[in-house]
Length: 220
Image (cartoon, rainbow, N blue to C red):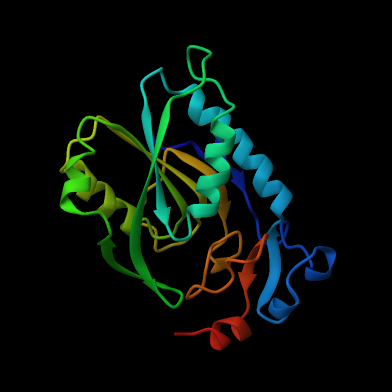
């Protein structure tokens, strides 16, 4: 079931627009980002809360936590670490196995709408009857995730839920909302905390809005 908007943190650009000189960012990105939208400490605290919410909704049955690469790997790592310490419906720790899937849909700062999935046919067939938790960095238009879910559904998993650190507030959205959301962000191209622009900015801890200078510099 999609998360209600009252349950996530709504990042309003004018309110959550921190100056670059108020935080530590790599010097090589000084001209490449406009502002900091979500500082690293706030990201981590929100992930800890999401881990509690997610784990509390499962029983003792093992789940497969599946990282959507590449951007989702940092969120995935931190979320799993917090979930290991959280308790399920029965007040016990949650059995988990980990998996990875690579999905490609971006070219420069645009979502192409085409989805390329890295899993083999055999790997997809092994998902039958399992409880999946897909961990994604950002839901933009939602088209990529919808197509991924349609693909996975053909292989009959027992359940599929999606946790996304970010949900972009864009008029181009297809209306898809994941089961778990960390932050809703303005309609900007955001980078940092392993969200990339053509594989750049993964070494930036904070989530920032990319500048026009950065877009031009790192365009494919």
